[in-house]
Image 1: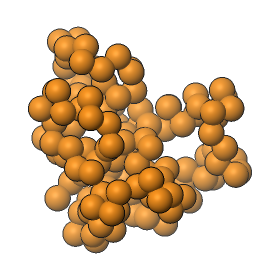
Image 2 (image 1 turned 135 degrees about the vertical axis):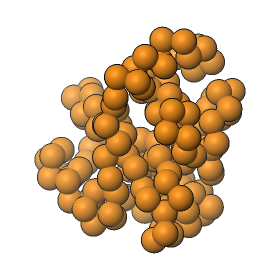
Image 3 (image 1 turned 180 degrees about the vertical axis):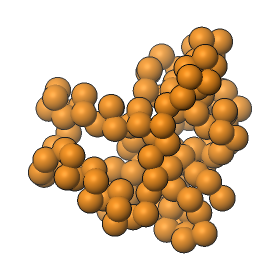
Image 4 (image 1 turned 120 degrees about the horizontal axis):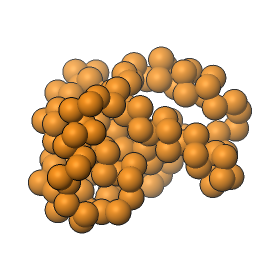
Length: 128
């Protein structure tokens, strides 16, 4: 199964944070699942770093590259189709990063692993 990880989800997984639910953790650990991290999440992490809202404990690029490789995660690019679908997406959620993740999950027809209940209003399959 292909799965898309919300930004907080992959960070919590990498940090072994107890806030990550056990069901979510088990789905991510399942070697049969293809784990996707959106390029929008890379963008969100970079912005949060510049605002001093998070600390990766090291340089951004090496942190992201190392953890993506160690966990066999893949980058999901942002396509023109994703952006086109964003135009008609209702504003159940105002966060621009999360709105893009919703569009990607819907367009790619894959579940998203997230604690964010706002995603449910879009009909996206959410695992937590």
